[in-house]
Length: 446
Length: 128
View 1 (spheres, each protein chain N blue to C red):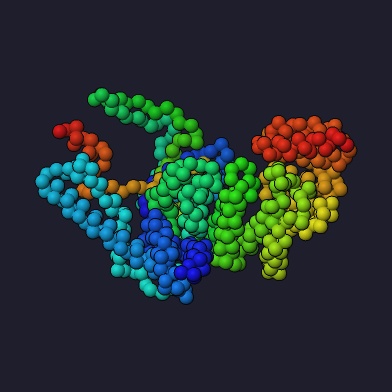
View 2: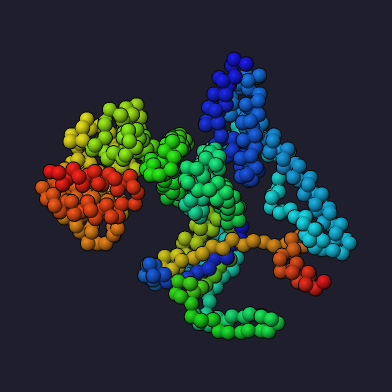
């Protein structure tokens, strides 16, 4: 039994690498998401039992898919038999003249669409199970269906983590600080909606692919940010969420290697995540970018992010999407030896490009700040004042905080302190409030 | 899948109606040619609708109050497509998707021979 820990590792690795493949394949064959998840989970449980004795199979994914498939066939056969019995009973009732007898006796009639054209012995073709006749990887169908825009955003997030990521309902609930029954209900509801609304299990056609891919990436980035922003809750759980988002982004990049924005999002996540340890100090306080101990940044992760960007730079032409531009900006920060040596001119240039693609006021704010930090403090401040007058960022605490930083650069300490007070009154989390108070103390001490 | 597509005219944030651009006839011809439109039509103007209720055995008929512009149903189509994505594709090209909005309601087929609806069950129970 000395090899047991090694086999456990192999099962854990297979879970990370193969869960999505096994589940996605089963969904295509059965059309039943819950059945697919249950059988996939059961297949991994069998692996834990059998691999220590039998050894790790040469192709763990194929082994798991085959086991899961057989489990699904068994369950569907049993269901078909039970349904036939219930139907027989219902017919008997009818003969006896009591059309609703079964119903009143609490015997649920089978939902006929549970068994849509299912033939347990049918189209299960051995072999290349992770892609169907059209050669499309089932995991890609799963990605697009989980992130379908007709599902509520929180349902997309939950389903992506559960069915694609293989997280348990309990893990997802804990990560989002939601009671487990609430999260379970959300997932059940999302699956119902997929069936009832007729959401297809397929990759969108070329015409709608760019928009739909944008939706997929938005879900992944949302998961990442839920982990990254780490305001409240269990920091470790949330770190796991960021890891999961990166893992899923890698999967999407592998499945769609030609989509530059997918790779850009991966680079952006890696570069931001590289600062995870430095964002919080020993006392658990939030540390802003310019004050972070850069030796605590994860150099290997930065290098991975930069490598993705280098590969993109070689391949893609002039058009840079929003994730690409944000990743380039993150790369500027990641490669600056000190905060003062940050190339804000270059960053401001990227923000100019980004603002042309994305008219959101938050982008406008960051663009103004970048120009201000690039030695154009007055111009940046004027732009922030215009933003304030527009009312688009009313009650957004980072607007007065940004104004304060540029006022400090202009030597207008009193005005800066007043803005920090404004920001403090609006800051949503205690960690941010404490950070602002520290900044206020620094500014007024000058 | 069958979808009932309900159409509103003009939303507050909708774009302006452009007669040269917004061609109902072309949309209908296209949808019919693709075999996705089962039937459909426009409805009489806002304020021409009638509400019918039965309460305590009595019949209550009233004229429907004017609906909010964004809630008033100006027309409908029944679409038959393979999936929601195909229905969305057809709906997205309807001229009113630009000026107002269209809502896709998935039809839930009922087979009275095998699945008693709550209404049918209630009637039979109360008749006992």
